[in-house]
Amino acid sequence: MGSGDLDAGAAGTGGASHITDANPYPASPGTAEQQPAQERDAGESGSAISEAPPSEPQAPVARACSTSLMAWPTTLTVTVRTDFTTTEDDSYWHASTGDYHAHWDGRAVGNATVEIVDSGISDTTNAHGVVELDTSPLPDGLHILRITAENVSADPVGPAIADPVSDPLPERIYRVLDIWIETLCGGLVEARVIPARLSDGSLTETHGKIGNTVRRVWDPDDSPNSLPVDLKPIWMHSRRHGAAIHPSLIVIHHTGGRVIGNALNTLPSPPSGNSASAHYIIDRDGHIVKLNRDTVNGQHAGFSFWGARTVNGFSIGIEIVNAGAAYPLAQYQALEGLLERLLAGYAIAPHRIVGHSDISTNVAPTMPAAHLGNKAGDPGVSFEWNRLERRGWGLVPMMGPIPGVAYGGLFTNADILTDAEKLAGTGIVLQPEDNDNSSRFGGHRRAGFSQRPITELQQDLLDIGYFVSTTGRYDQRTESAVQMFREHFWSRVPQINPATVDGATANLVKQVRHSMP
Image 1 (cartoon, helix red, strand yellow):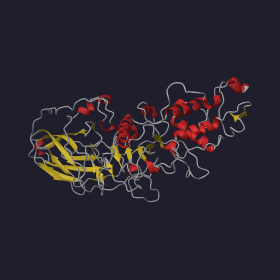
Image 2 (tube, rainbow, N blue to C red):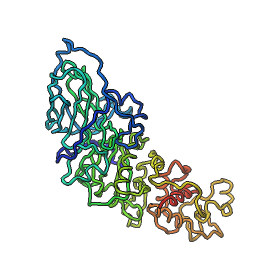
Image 3 (cartoon, one colour):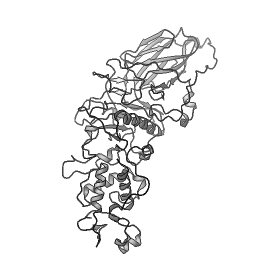
Image 4 (cartoon, rainbow, N blue to C red):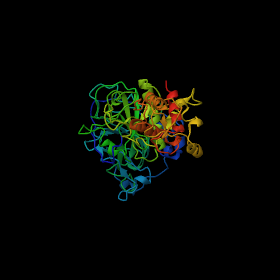
């Protein structure tokens, strides 16, 4: 979609309780960080790399309560907010805040239950997301601090979240967050988030972290009994949507910004001018937030066309936080898991997954000047479509030779080449002004060639889903469709003018067309 690099804002928590599910205790402090990333479970992605069983709690390092430690405060102040913070890499470092960058201006999570499991110590957060717990009765050692918001679910993000719920929908839905804490002399000396076990058996570590805009990091030496928590929702109720739909297409977008805050500032907000939204957004760490029911018009596609129809009325829009650089592995894993659930949940044909650039027109498709290209670069040439193709999803080229003679042999018939083309070895490259009716191809009239390759090319692109008309002329609408097709498959075609058709491009169009039902 390309929502820009804005700052944030969204609605607060509330609404009726959704689903409550006990959260198991999967790992001890340090377990997830000590394992190599490639060996850990992919969590919400559904693309698990490892199914290693959760580790048992490890005994804390033996420490004794000393006279100096006994002076520590024994009232634990927990601050629960939704801030979408990150400390991922150097690109997010800010001189004023070290390695911390807040994605969003944050919202307090009020009325959340905060308890120390099996201790009898429990209370709820106030309107500022703050609760104070007396930890003086706790024995030294490990405990589990559990945060349960008003509306929680252990289901993977997808059709199971919000779509089955009767109105009114809750403003937010969260995961239960468990945190290992270690106490000594009644004070807090260690804290670490525990991955959550979802209802499908997978683990997720993206639903909460220690540190928020109130306190960027937790430091037991600096503030031993103040625990800041960033609790990230899996559902944020968008007010931007239209009528009910039955989804049969999935469109992948990028936000155009490096952090999630700019998109959250726009997509879930009440309409004001631009009413664009989406159904899902995937953060850089793979955390997925659902914004609209899958079965309503998410208004994510604007002017668009696919398969002879405008797109909003039958599609699900997925935004990925990205500004044009390489997409992190965590996002691909999360996307694949989400796509798997959506394809199964709505019986969507596997080839019906496209990018915003494939569908977006400059004006309404019914207008004479309409053509593709309005969202070139979305999700962009850095998006690795072949990851999806390996699973048989999206526009998958046919393997093996193409049956019959493609495009009348225009790109393989050496007898119709000019001497210059033979010498250059480039073959025929379609260009503006080429026309079936005049047998003009590659800027030259081909005497004796009576086939209609441009019409055939246009029909193939139209059958795939692209916005073209079968005019027999290599017109602007055809150029634009070719350019968006080439962008989708950018790494597989020669880097010539992106709006032209050479033999490799024509062959790829035919391969994709033949792979479709």
